[in-house]
Length: 81
Length: 443
Image 1 (tube, helix red, strand yellow):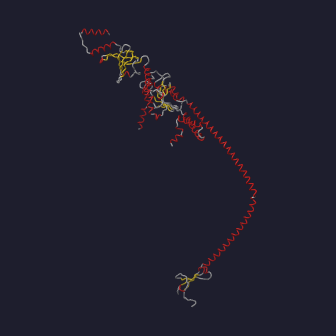
Image 2 (cartoon, helix red, strand yellow):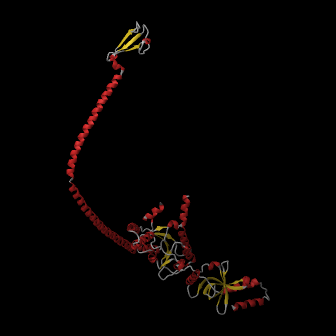
Image 3 (tube, rainbow over the protein chains, first blue to last red):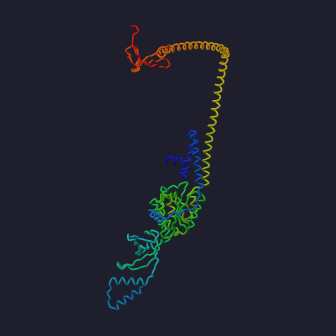
């Protein structure tokens, strides 16, 4: 179930995973080895991946975050316990 | 010096023969050296018989073509030396001469030592390169590939330096969608290398949570001394051990540090970090557009082909159906003609007359049967009514019963004198009478 969800859900893919899958899909469609209906399905998936990639590219928080020093972190952990 | 010595001899002569202990002599000599030599000397020579004792102190000789001088360098002084002194190395050593009284020898106590000719740091750098190179730490085989589309980058540099801004701008100008994380570390001075190395190890340990794709370690330009932290072994080892790919971005274009050599990729300056670390978003957008176009054009072609095929099939299908229809129509006409020849309406008229006659005949026959049945039914009914005893009463007969027993009286034995008898007539009429006499008519 979880596996299926992950497979169908483009939202969880990293940019790298998405663009790799997209490149594979375009290759498959171009080779024409798959039936038309599958091609259309793959095409839909490809378009979803492109949308996902563009979504990632549009994100730009442009705010530099600071990594806390390990002392601060370990203190926090001790506090919570 | 010669004068001083003469004075001592002179004094001895005056006090007849004075006896000195060994310690006294050494002490005297020590005093003479202290009083007659500059408090600090810089001596040029070549290192020989170098010994780095486990105590941390160093013992060696400085020599030239004709002479040699025993030297000592205490641990505390040696720890400040950046390069690795070695036999045959020409150096300038600064220190003082003193007598080592337990062995009765004078020696040179070295406080500072620098290579003659090249600078100490340069030499130290060259020595470190050679050492790590022999270990294979710079080999390409150890270089980790950088992710093509990083989404989280860690920057290890000084919070206050210009480098953090340069790195940030150079990355976001090309790839604005990446998240940047600054791990503030000192980038020069005592302990800087240790702190950067510790930060590298800390980030690696916490990367399950931090999820950084790349680390950038760097600082802006400066003197070789300013950049020195990036030449230290402890940092080189931490970079080598990092599981996260490391990009070095140190100093100016001309500077090369050990960190540059060991890192997985090198940016010549902090402002070039972006080009090394991230792709150009415009190129990636174009790549996406090209992929989309390739998929679209192929799918369009596939759909057009399918449409054309289905059009062709439709034409063939409708063509064959039309033929079948035409044939059927001809056959239908032929059958129609045959039917017309038979003139079915006339046949039908005659049949209708026949049918009406038949219907009338049937009705008459059935009526006859019904009548007959009715008559039989009445006869049966009459017969049944005749059998009912009460219907006999209508004709003047009566039924007599003994009132006491309630039984029918059929002969004289059924009744006694003085018994009451009941006579039933038609219409439920009853007569009650008393028996006064019993008699047979024939007697």
